[in-house]
Amino acid sequence: MCYDIKVNLERQLKLAKRKGDKESIAEIESKLMPLLNPMEREFYQVSGFDHPKFFVENQSNNGVPFIAEWGLIPEWIKTKFDADIIRNKTLNARLETIKEKPSFKDLVRFNRCVIRVDGFYEHHHRNRQTFPYFISNHENELVIAGLWSKTIIDDTERITCCILTKPGNVLMSKIHNNPKLDGSRMPLILDSKTEELWLNNMDLSQMTPELLGLENEDLFGHTVKRFKKSDMKNSESADKYFRYSEIEDTLF
Image (cartoon, rainbow, N blue to C red; front, top):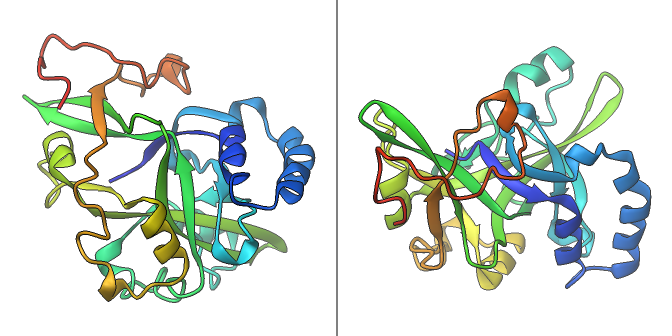
């Protein structure tokens, strides 16, 4: 599962400028960025259960990103009580079952999006201990497939999103080995070709293993310091290599 990511909002916008409407993005920077708490602009490590807000992109918005909260709230949810319950269950959506799940099936056709992150975190299990890993590529730029939704909760518009996951590749099968789960998982990472296919509503049946990038050969992972303690919350060193004496094969 992917519940922790690293993302820089200002960097997201710079990446979006490569293909988006620069004037619209500049307007977002000037109007929206000052409204965000400084801690919300640089997520060195943030948990989905904290429901952070970050920028996502879709095809119909001309490449201009918009702010969405992590933890998808379907449009048929209308109360804060129900929203608070469901958003902890919809941080991720399995690619294999999104057409079956009520929360996601109506969004697959027209509410696809991509989320640009620096990397994500996963835990490796060994000898009854867990060791966090940071996973990224050499550019520290990952494009993850997602879904988004817009609903009204207590007269307030809420735009939310989730991350799509798929079976883990060779690297992730070594890192993400939770014995309580049926196999490893990882985010659905897109390259430039599959990003375009995803956003243009390509039929999921046509998304072959090759298109899904099951190997993602440029990914790497290394151990990092455990970040559940309060002193590590959103620490600048969250993604930095940390050596554990209990685990020597830190790099896969």
